[in-house]
Length: 203
Image 1 (cartoon, rainbow, N blue to C red):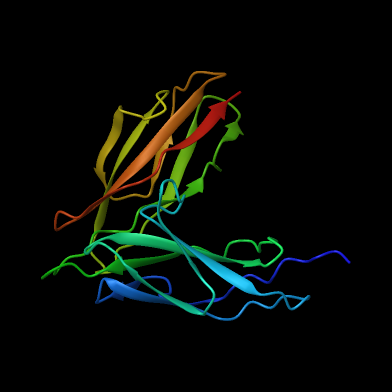
Image 2 (cartoon, rainbow, N blue to C red):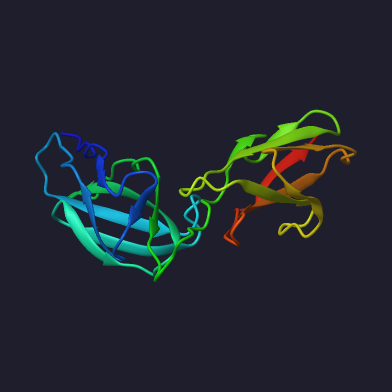
């Protein structure tokens, strides 16, 4: 009989936008089920960005929790998958963002931005497009954004600074080119998060 993969584990802790007061965190999740009743191991991955590149920690557990010690004062992301004893793996769970409390921290860095448009690595018609993203801050601080956009794989041209809008109209683009952009998120207390690099191509 064909072996099927276990179900995706459901995350229990930390859920989205949790502030973890202790940086020794017990990650928790619910049981995956496996149609064949195979033994299941869980793999937890933690990263500083929602693209999981690079991954900071990869931890495995046969139980429904895992104690992981992390750096203080960080915005982090985690996901989990289940693998059965015949190496069939579930998809990853949704990505959850959380914060580790720093020493005497009264301000938390904003979460890194997530891309709304254009879709990652998409192709656009014409020589203009609207870049759009979302960002959040656990303290509810007002956020401002710096936008970098050019044809370098790590964009260095700052096209907007300290804007409060979460969109930027990119115009005058060259045709048949790949553009790269990133957004730096800043709160009003000096907290900064640098987003990952996103790209799109003009026809």
